Image (cartoon, rainbow, N blue to C red; front, side, top):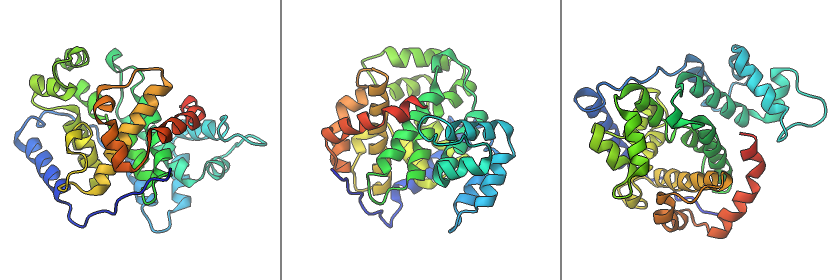
Amino acid sequence: MTAILSEPTASPARTTAIQQEIDQARRSGPLQHIVIPPCPELLARLREAMNQAEPDLNEVAHIASSDVAMSATLLRAANGALYASGQPAQSIGAAMNRLGLEETASIMTGFLAQNAIRVNSPHLQRFWERSTKRAVAMTYIARHLPGMSPDLAYTYGLFCHVGLPVMMQSVRGYAGTLVEARARIDRSFIATENANHRTDHAVVGALVARVWKLAPALMAAIRLHHDLDALGDSFTEPEIHTLVAAGLVAEHLACVHEGLPPDSDWTRYAGKALDWLHISEADVQLWSEELIDAFNAC
């Protein structure tokens, strides 16, 4: 079944409110002492190149070639099971031709984000692997929702939970909070974070998006990704609701692939998300099967 994406509203009411919330908390609230890694220069250049009316292919290729490890990542992807055909790609140009510009930019974004925000805690094992799966699923979903940008969807999937490793690096005692939050059944994950630290990973993730100058819709969706009671309200821009709802589906698809039970957000809010996206449980089941190879490549 083909989903219909609601038209974006002209009034960015929720986005503006979230920007003000984040800025105030940064100036004089609980975000004052959160250390945000700087946005990589290459990522800023990549975004600038991709945001042109006609993306600058030469600039993207130059950025890709400027880091040996990133070049190797692109070549590995181009020669992997999902894309390999004929002779192996042996240059960045050949890899880009095989992957396509959009996929090339997504892989580069993921590489640069992972290297900027390191995850060394045993409490966040395979964090970037799961983030990549979520991003891949978001791209797939976007291609089934007319009007939804695959690039925006991928970036949201990648950064949705980025507040977790940032808090792990900046907040004393956060490792213990993670253990507690995962164990408690009497309150939500972010309620435990707020009880212990007066902020949570959704707020911190939105701060990362703000500092890195990601799209305002991304910042707002990251801030609201656990505020699912508000899904569909009239105060929030439809584009944000769509990102949050699709993110819940993407997270569920990753859980299914890993053989994990549905999480509490999916159990409570799946119906609401599916209704917003105008898709069915049968669609989700079909997507789960069609994403197996892509997930295996993550």
